[in-house]
Length: 144
Image (cartoon, rainbow, N blue to C red; front, side, top):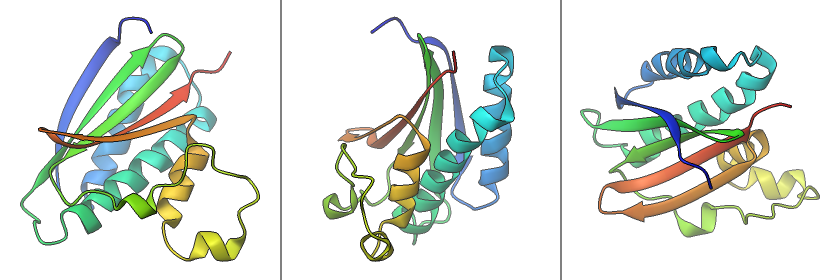
């Protein structure tokens, strides 16, 4: 793996109004790369879904809390890593890394639809916990 390039870190309050700020920050970070909106949109959708999960589920009883997002580029890919100190994602809600295209609608509708959507919008999803909190890294390879 190459050295991570041009990381940008932002801290956002735990409120749905932060989603607009998050989308603007993503586009500002990506602007120098010259990627089009059709490439940005899936990453934005996954990022906003992940942030919504933090706000509504991770911090359900802590509206004063905040979360961090770190944008970075590593070679031919861009990542957005969300870091929060809320309730962790339940292990049974994390889809397997080799998510099968043949999942039925009933399987998707029983819960975890947001995580399913996240996995479909980006090339790689990593989740881990550390002393700093919960980390969810969403990575999308650059076109070309």
